[in-house]
Length: 560
Image 1 (spheres, rainbow, N blue to C red):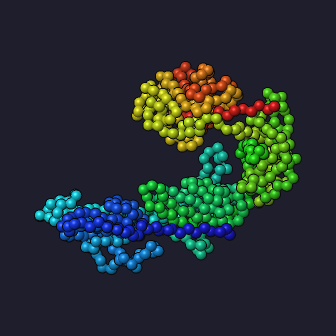
Image 2: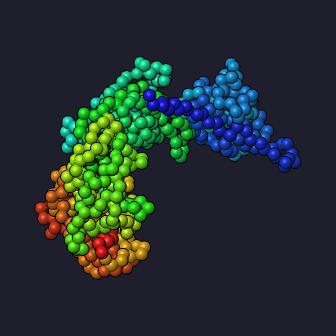
């Protein structure tokens, strides 16, 4: 049985005391003034607070004839016996104190969530700022509002995940557990918890349902799974190891303007992972990685690897580079299991590969064994993605990440459209957080029969681009039913037009498009413009939408 993580909520108090050394004495006592102190700041009339915490209110007025504090019925007056080391205040409640006190200092405990009002009523014989003359006396009523936050209280759903029934569609989710806010599972009760049995390599889907306490986030703790911690909501969690596992969650409130609060809770579900009935195969697309000058091919398999010994000769890495006249195999120097993820195999290459190479990898079969005793199946030539290098463009510009409150600039820093860009309420080109393939935003274009070009004014900033051959790519999202055929990007100097064919791209999903481009030296400040011209899109319908994101220009390195 894996270790169960138990987390507890902590309550934090405001500043407990303050001192005031007023060395200056008024020459006459016949003077009225209004001043007050609340724990944390002077004269603060609005606070946010966790439930079961307190605020110290102290009236420092001079020569008040009458003085009363009034609190809501749900609040309690505390005596002065508590210290900074106390966190539970029930022993310090003044019994039968009611809701009114004439003491100068009121220590108020807040025991219910919501907006609570603390009222101070002062009467003076002389006018003070804000007072009102009533019956020959000057009256000043002050209201202090406290927004009291309940403790967050975790709740969640857990689902099984079926990706095999229809691999081309979204996974089928089946709810297997509901944990409500009323539940408080304990480890000693584990024998009564629900159980689920899944095969190694399967996933569970965790969905936060916390509402009490106005949470701002959460975290899952899933020891033995991948990942073992996640701040995503919802979260897909994969189980590759055999055995029984448990999990827990935290509900979190934090950030500006709210009192911090974190509460953890066990999830009452025992997860029994058994051997998989599915074949043990290569999955996903292999990639070339580099670390400390060492290149290796990395690829995933459908389970954790337990045994991988002397398998190098069973792999073939084939490389073709037509421009260099190269067509041959590169030896695998070593085959190993990834140190952090046992579902990943790494093949260290004996010779260098280049981002102009076309690479594939195959496996003739051997004795690579999973933790549930399956043997990795052989596979024929699988294309390998070469991580080409660093993007020479500034990433925030390339991914349309920086909002700018100017519709003429497409609401995005580093771009310009001008007066033709529709209107402030309905721009043709605009920064959008509706969809993103990279980061948090993208560029949205809404089709119009008029030619409206967008200038990428910061394309070559700050240092320009060196002459050479580049692999240029970007991500495109065409909404379902979109009939657009292509668009242009235009390098301003020297004037060069690049056509992007999008007619046959899938709709309703992000797709990466790319082409090789050769350029001379490009000076800093040269623009790259975007043109959704009418000639290129004859027959397209006004109002159709396209999103662009994640532009990349990577220098191609020729094989010597």
